[in-house]
Length: 290
Image (cartoon, rainbow, N blue to C red; front, side, top):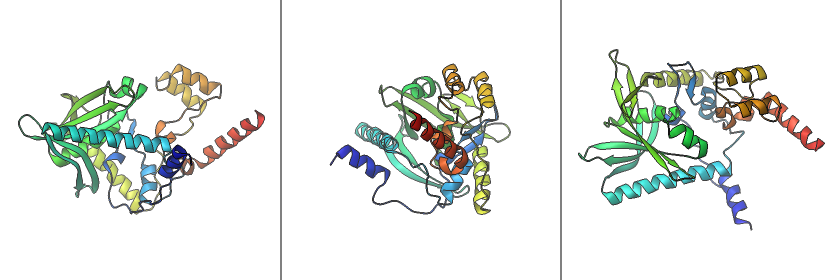
């Protein structure tokens, strides 16, 4: 038996699969429309709808993805253990249920600060370009959507958002605080700098909209795009959303331009069935001519 092959096969199709039904929103599937540029941030409503209604994934997480999840959980466990050894551990994997907004989640870690006040911690991993040019500069907005809900629910004075590089073992830490403006809008500050890209209420408003789609059994529109047409891709290049190398590859038809949210979606083949069928047919024809 090839042990690597056997394990990878198992982690993508385990013997026991959790089939519990949904009863609440998850902090990780939050979505908002950016107040700065109108772009959609967070998880696609259509993908969340498919999860809510129990649709089987057409593109389940592969072995690489499962191992990545495991590395993240093991790293989280390391932070918990070291905090215990230091005597600053206050709790870990603490469940939250926001009854008012019907949101259920789990906070990674709580610690005691120097004044013995409890603070929250969220731990994420990244690597390569995603660490060096992205989260090392500013947190992922998707992660801010998640952390602000914990910060609001647990009422801690701040929340630590930590990123660890899986390849270089570098790390970066951001301190998040929740503030209220003159109009009563709650917003995040990151290392003391206000972040007006979204308000806390924007998240809850989008949960309500998603809930209406689910209750009415109405499929939401897509929030992201798989395979932009060439004109839109050229526009995205001018806007600096894709690189020159990527633009050249798309023009040569050796690559496609898609939102990463679609490429990593568990329901890609269901949501974009026609484009996916055409893409697979093209790949088969190319293989036949090789």
